[in-house]
Length: 432
Image 1 (cartoon, rainbow, N blue to C red):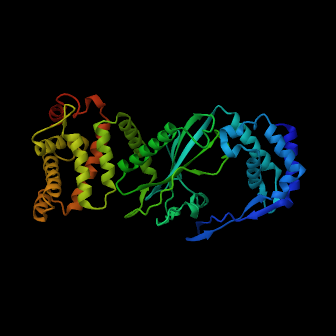
Image 2: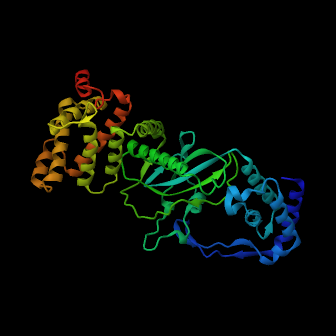
Image 3: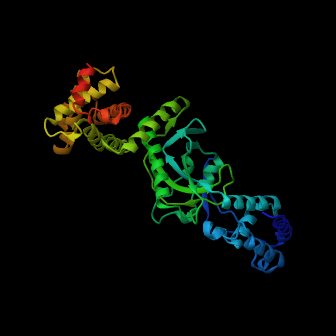
């Protein structure tokens, strides 16, 4: 930025104070205040139309339009790069108790100019995780991937405006869900990337979110959901230049039996879970299919549905032999192979106990799917492994599956028992 532009900005700020209207945008939102939701409808500063005909405004407009840094800003930032929008945004950021402060106005223009000239920018996706809380403020899973416990101000800033509500859909009090995941990628500073990133950039960010979410589910039992997401750009270490641009408006009312807490002692295990899931996602094979079905099962409310999903995940692992689906003796194979991997993942469980449990689990699934949920037969199957009810059986099957997936992830893909030739037999002999 030139000294002339700085001088003109200072003159403009001193002159424009009497030509500001406080405008209600007519798009209020609920925020949390003193423990309850209240409707907030704050006015924003706006330059009067008459002021745009005055010499100081026209001079500033012309300098920005002709400035070497801003001349082609609209090609990268769209409407945000037009001189009149730049001036409006500059005024909004500089307005304080009826006055326009030239210092933040100049800073905004400097940051905008710096961002336009940078070769690379950080693109960050922000996504709330519903049904989870943390006792620590921040967990960095790896560079560019963090979980953050939002402050009260951030929680209120993130609340959607009323216009974002879809007709007939419930309004979620997002201030009750404090944990946000943030995934960042570095991208080339090209034309219109700012507001319209390429499809592969969005897909990359969403895939990173899925890995984080899957890691949380694999790490700790409980129900959770991902909420609405948005993204923004900013230079490394620089100021956020723009408001948040929602990528989607998803408003639903999930059912949570209670919040899941991530505490300090969970951090290292969560990081291990994250690295395991990242590895599984990169392979997209049998273990990936099992993980996806496990995640579906964890969020099922009905015990029958939960158990069936877990067994489908188990089947992907246990009924794959020499990298092919097994065709016969399904229940026996399910129990035998299941006992082998369970005894490896949880040595305190005897092979015989694991075999009996896995056979009973498969029997429950068959009764639910093929036997119209015959209660007497279900009770007999549950009694074989001293399970109180179907909920307990499903929960136990899911917890064992969690351990099995993590155990499998530690084995090189080519050497996993379902893929290596004679892999299940080898696991049986090695792990008596």
